[in-house]
Length: 411
Image (cartoon, rainbow, N blue to C red):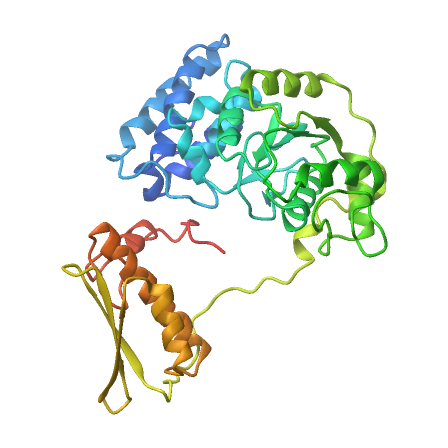
């Protein structure tokens, strides 16, 4: 596919860069994310005041012609070229907001996070820690925590636009708060955290957030004077807490779920001047993800059979039962366990001592879960195969990844 040859104005260059890189991949040429990006780019460039930007519309139309029939709305790629093209449109064209990239707001929620270019122009992944959130404009100054509310984040991302960096929920007063804090500290653009929605019963994460900002923690990393059940932040350091209290101001809208009120408060906060951060805070803003070692999953080098035998899993649609046959390694049928829930069958197998290896237990649990889903949904089950898919020489996953540049399954 040919690149755009004409001179490109600076404010359109990053948009076209994202589109061209994505359109070089077949998976993107069949994806709804890229279709949305091309449609948004076409509308935006066509309405631009500068003639040199309007002249780029033909190049976008050529890319639209190169699209293939849409095979999926979104496949959750770590790097989504289409979505990032819309972020660049929002950054450089005032009439565009990130919400315009998705006629289906559910598509946004399917993307756990997007690779974006932070202020030093290095391509990096933010937020570094996974969680239940939706990324907006990474250079926005406001983040929103909706506490236990699951529906608000995607609505707020769609309604607020470039002022909002990220919106997500947080149920717990320990691990949940830790991830929020680390993700916010990893982006020095974010200076406000708006708390809204309703607290999860019993946890009182909102109170822990307020006391963390107001009082900090003791030597045991327990949030001082918090009424939460167990506000102990074992995965943060005293330095993290100090940086959080310096960088982030809290906006207390706890209990508020009205989108219009939250939108107004977010935009008001975004207009406020930012206080200067210390050099210590800025110099440490990109080091949080490396604190815990990450292991890349890989297949075992050798396969060791369980001396206790092997299992055959047989879901029975007529009766709704899962039959789990246990064989000795010589092929003699030793036990038959039946039930309707995979977890109960697995517990029975373990209780009876019918397996002796952790990898075998993990394998059996996975197969029993697949069998249970197959019974509930009426889909095809075949042991050792993907659920609902008959074995074939070339799976759909392989087709999506046929281009060496595909990054949809990067760790």
